[in-house]
Image 1 (cartoon, rainbow, N blue to C red):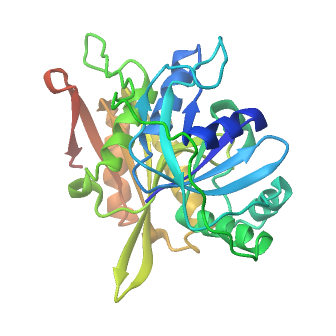
Image 2 (image 1 turned 180 degrees about the horizontal axis):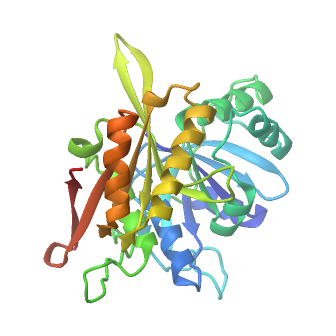
Length: 324
């Protein structure tokens, strides 16, 4: 189950609650637009939804009723923006009329309890995925602010999905390389949302994309691995993934190793075995292959390399691991 924060104005928030639907912006710059679509592709039925209402605070909690869909029917009354990337939701658990102040969120970020939240990226794309542990912190604050129980209400005029999938464009150049990386990212998010790729990555719990880091860059994909043992959820591994539509270079390799080391320090308590890193690309430089071989011998730790190929007839992608 995923967890998401949506950015919305006060006026649009009222519309969202009236119809039980949220719409992501359509951006004129296709690379940004592809990243917005990729973020929405990670949403699945039952995911928790929070709203950050501008200049007010964070409200909760709602649950996604299904997969996201593409719909340009007018809801919010803006001629210049139809918010076509949509997801329907319903209230869950209880009402929380008093929101969480943004200052409380920033305090949690300073303490390291919320680390995937970046206001700059959030404002640009209006959607921020967060981990389950971060979601628990938000729920704790909502309970703190709202000690009296109020049962959930009903959506006044429930909106319905039209079932049209988001436009995930796996267009390639003459070599077969995907033209825009955001759509490759979106394919991974869609695959994870449908429970795919476990034969490659293993069982996973949270899957987030475009996760902000301390390097003023974003991690393409981040996953948590949790196993339930006798009703106890045990977090035992993290995965970071860097995506490249073309040739993976030595610089890309250095980037993923930097992310790996950062995660080891930040959330894995120094346990390097708890973090696995993966590079996905159309092809790899010889220097990348050589480094991975040497690292395996010297450090007994590797960076997994995966080549992707687009199957146009099926509008799908296949992955093959590169043995070093």
